[in-house]
Each structure stands twice: as C-alpha cells, then as structure tokens.
Image (cartoon, rainbow, N blue to C red):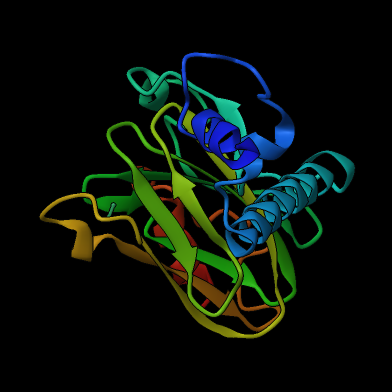
Length: 208
Ligand code: CUA
C-alpha cells in the first residue's frame, strides 16, 4: 500500500501528498548524480582559475591596449606615419598598420638586443600579427590597438605574418624584423620605418 503511494508521487500525481526530497531525487541514477557533481565542481574550478588569473595575476587577453576610430585612424598621428621610433637606448616603438593585404611597414630593422614595443591596428578588417620564433602573437581588430613588447637578443630575420584569414590576399600579408649586429645601423636617426619618407633609403646607404 505504501508502495502504491510512492509510485503515485513519482508519477507526478495530482496530489502533493508525501512529495519530499527522497521522492524527487529517486529517479536520478547515482552515477549520473556523481557526474553532475563533478561537472559543477569543474565549472566552479575553471571560473575560479580564470578569475584569479585575470584579476589577481593581471593576465589579460593579448594586446588590447587602446581604442581608435578605424575610419580616421590612418589620418591621425602616429598612425598617419607608421614605422619605427627610437625612444631610448636600444628601445623602440614600432607603429604597424595591418590592412588588406599588407603590413606598413613591411620591414623593421633594429640592432641586436633591442626592446621593441609593437603597436598594431587595422583600418579595415580583422588581421593577425605573429612574429616567427618569438612569443609575439596577437589579433589585430579594427578600432583597437594591440600592444606587445619583445626583446630581440639574436641576430637574424624574424618574419611576421598575418595569421587570421582575411580574404584573397591573406597569404601575401607578411613582413620582416631584421635584427642586425651592433653598429650596422645609422644610430643618429635610428629610424627605419615608414613607406612614405626617404629616410629609410638614406639609412641603408649610410650603413654600407
Ligand atoms: Cu590579414 Cu590575413
């Protein structure tokens, strides 16, 4: 008789009599219940990990540094004249425009041991910026400036590429960081950037 009553409750009978916790959980398999507990525990753990990393340790999404208007960014300094700026002894800032389908500048030349802060933005659509053999790897989103800093301690060519598919010319979007031995660059200007001015050319002449 009592069995009959229990069944009635489990089958969601019209009467609420005897509707207690035991009856509600009766239908869940113990194994399934444990898996559910594990799932909830993992979710809590992951959220906690992300919260600690983001807020306590300051680990944020790569790059996101500043917002700009993608429609006017190329008419505004410093983006109107992208390229390399020397800001100290072996310290540089490189303003790089990633656009369909090229980088400006497509070549950055620095003496070995230089620390370069690279700021990248896009006036059109989403691109990527990755320098081979380094941990420099960021998205380039229109309206946003991505900022990464890297010290180049070995002489050589470090190609940079767009690694977000951005259309038919995607494969042609690349450039190179040339890390040259001490004293090979014109240290007076130290400026090798920009496609529009002649300084880059005169620098190359001087260094021969
Ligand atoms: Cu730009 Cu792919």
